[in-house]
Length: 367
Image: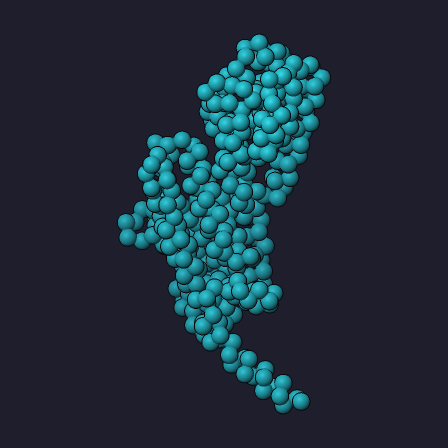
């Protein structure tokens, strides 16, 4: 006989009326674990502490923070687990059509009217909880970190193993970078979780915007990211990371009227083709070792753990492994020339001009 206990979905019910909350609790607690909040402020504090409620029911008219204000907080949260949550607004006879329209336009998932009966409340909760569970399952299948929207550690490992296999088979370059955001620990100790989330999510988005389509960034810990860089040598990955570092240091976050800046510590490892038994986990462990050295050093923000001779061979004239060409080639093939950064153009043209001249001569001689 199995001792596995089914975890009941959690529901947050927000209303300033003790009578309404008691009635809803009695109905919903038959199938769900019900948590109560007396107003929007109370509900928001509970959501920050537990972003995994399956659904939120919230009255429109409440003291301190009403339902409309709560909904705005939820929909603008940097934490996707909160921002994308089903929110059912509870309406009464006194709520105007204009108020209901405003709530709907702000992103309410649905409405339920007071007084509600057992069937209406249960069916409403059941339908949105089922939908939310299916969406969560889909994100799990796709390897998505629900809070940031980036890939998670499991997806990173899956894609990394594929990239490593291809790199070994075709003797291509491959680099891994582990990035730790600092000094995030200071914020975590003194500020709310939402501030920490805001910083991590925004930095993750900006890192992603600096990568090529075939490169992957994943969130593997609270303030740690991992980058998968195909066709990139150790030296060229360091060039790419320096750009990311400059970008992160230029970001400003307004927190309690203070503007804070952040930096990153980075550890990089790359594929050494002389090591025939290397695994993707080995590459990640090497990157993590380099990262810890970076964190422990006052003067080395980027630490590499690579084969020096391979790094030297990778830099220079070999266009196959040239950093700028690798970043630009997918855009050239697709015809998206405007996506090529301006500072790459001279370098790329310097590599391609001999080929263009050769192709032009071949074309003219064949006519």
